[in-house]
Length: 458
Image 1 (cartoon, helix red, strand yellow):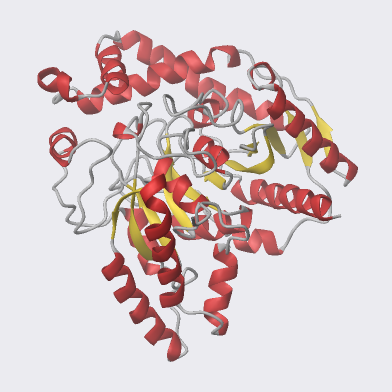
Image 2: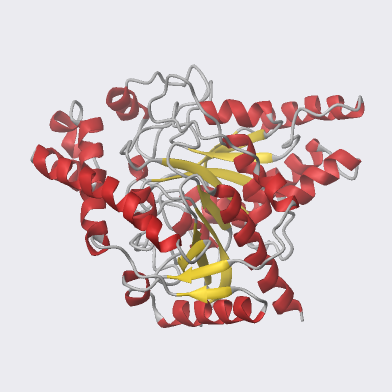
């Protein structure tokens, strides 16, 4: 039987460099991923659809371009998968439910008539779209059919379930996810890969099925920090006319990694719910990682959480379900029986809210977003677990409480593996940066990732 987890997976950065030197081709990269899909996806169920013929045709076009000494962009020939809440022209967007309910709820045509803004940028950069990945229903909490490739009896997390599992198994080199609570960070952590949630509005949501516009963050899942940087350099952009789009200039993350500061990062380990909810395996892995970083020169402090942080999960839920209710209010009342239990319950809860509760939650969200900046007075990034523990069973997608605060405050995060549970399931750390501070965050994350790898090899 083919191993579901490749022992030495090719990274996006390695593959992109190999294409440019002629060591490999787009066709070879795509063919390798299609082979992995054929051998693994029957068990993992990461994909809703695979566009094999189209991907091979596009790869051949890119190879012809490369033979003439030209390249489409920084992702030339890289096979990328797209979460099925993101529009790809010519393909349906089912959002884990049905194309009929998506069409009725969002008003979007089926199949999609045009690419989402982020898909257009990927194509322009030379990425090859290999397929669409499974999402939980409307990117919420009901479990997906996708299995965790490290243990098929466990969840891959959600809602970017298929995206994380596809990257972990080598069925693509990177994938698009989205996060409203913990839907990039947690699946990446459970599947043993890396994930990035950019600052709110940095990656345009145009063409992405909305969950709750005050919380929605599209972002990448890949094999490491440098791969995430390469993806975000393509994805981050301002979309004029989109009120949710962030117009902060983006200097480039690959450039930031090429000019690392001469000093080690200042790391702020968070307590509160991040310590209380973490299990013993997670706490031990984080303790070990912080000791390794401190021994290598990092300065570790323990900043206090601001007033009101203990209410963050309650208010995050209010903003989430209010957004869901706003997006489903026309369709849900006459079609409640079509909704899975978890999603239907959230929509119903949101429809019952008083407007005053939503306004109070939004005020809290904006105030906490300002107050959390005090945590950075003596540190460059905040450090906490990426999940409360290893992946649980398939009846759930896991606890999002380690991630929801950062979706709520809109701060950027990067997560990557730091160890395993006693049962061999991946564990991960989550680094949190200042608003629109992706450059400094990625420099710290790359330093931490490299330092751990060096320690493991010594």
